[in-house]
Image 1 (tube, one colour):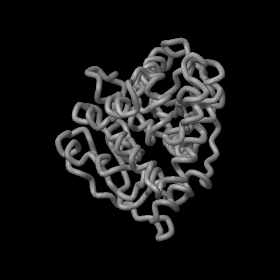
Image 2 (image 1 turned 90 degrees about the vertical axis):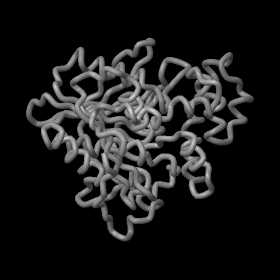
Image 3 (image 1 turned 180 degrees about the horizontal axis):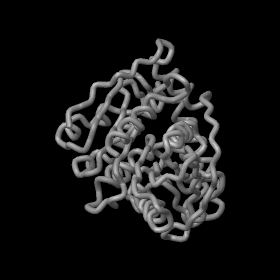
Image 4 (image 1 turned 135 degrees about the horizontal axis):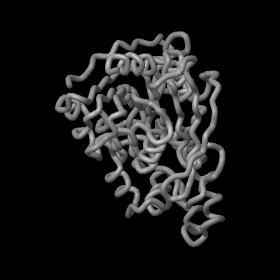
Length: 319
């Protein structure tokens, strides 16, 4: 499918990547009433699902997945959930393991390629709910998970009709290099602080899995993935984790209509995170690359973001 020409043109103030990214992450507010449900994963761990509903009974559902160290209450989750609720589509915001305010039960947690947990979520919903049409709206790390999920399996459930993925780090190694650049130092330090804060409790609970010295020596996101993410999830090291989990290699096999929105001024993404070749070769993959938007910072009018409007528009055409 040809690359889509974007119509996104924010005000001059929000054309700078840093401004749109920081404003969206720290200052945007969205009010949404949610109901929490906990269910058990295949390995005995748990996930918390935050549901919100349309005013009338609906047979349609959008599943939302967050980014690194996000949760179901982040505005980039509640914003699209509210918009879809207002358009007669139920929504469920998935909190990855350990991201709902309570430590998960295992040494492992979540990562960019953990599609087995998403598969559990989908299967749980199909078994216990009555939705005939299911869609995805996923951000950053969660977007990589969705693309990998859709592309790595031959039989995606027929109820899954479409996906919209935003600010996707299609090449995790390239994105890691970008995050370690000087311009992203503040972001990287913030992510690392949160990740190490959670890992500290696991060091106490699982001293045979990770030593205190190894924990103290983690000074970067790459080192975090070398010491913890890779070892806890069956990879040799960080690079092996990035290589196996990057969704770009799975994009040619996606059979569900999928809209990818990656801003050209997203400082978290490397040049390899813009899969133009794959989009042109796959009729189910639509790639939109706005000039602006930063990382999940597509600020627009009335507190409804451009990517959210595009998601509703895209899904409405597919439905």
